[in-house]
Image (cartoon, rainbow, N blue to C red; front, side, top):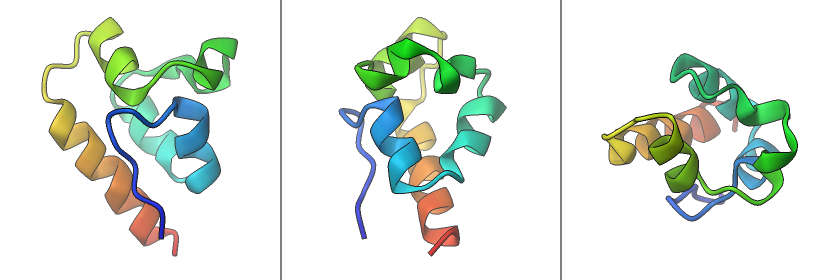
Length: 69
């Protein structure tokens, strides 16, 4: 099973599991449908949206991946 890291792009995370969209939306990261998602990483997007606890975000994304398996 693939793991999401800080360096995973938004698009890669969505390709790993569409369930990650719920997590992104929970954090107000509505970039899941925009062109930026193809190259911006989870860490970059979190920084842009003022999210300081990136490790928790990454953990929740990986939990969503596991839940979808």
